[in-house]
Length: 68
Image 1: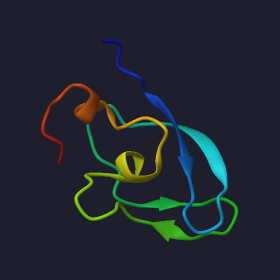
Image 2: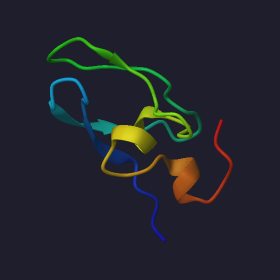
Image 3: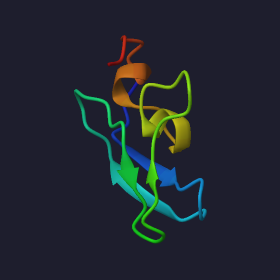
């Protein structure tokens, strides 16, 4: 399985979407929407904003590794 490092993150506040490059070896706990400036956090049970709001889960989860 090829690991993907780009994900389209969708702001749950305004619906704005943007493709972002995910960090390879760390989790991203906060993300600021460039449109509405809302700071989003992962949903309960998810390790990062990409697992909650991205089109692709974070690299650690894709590799079946434990995440932060």
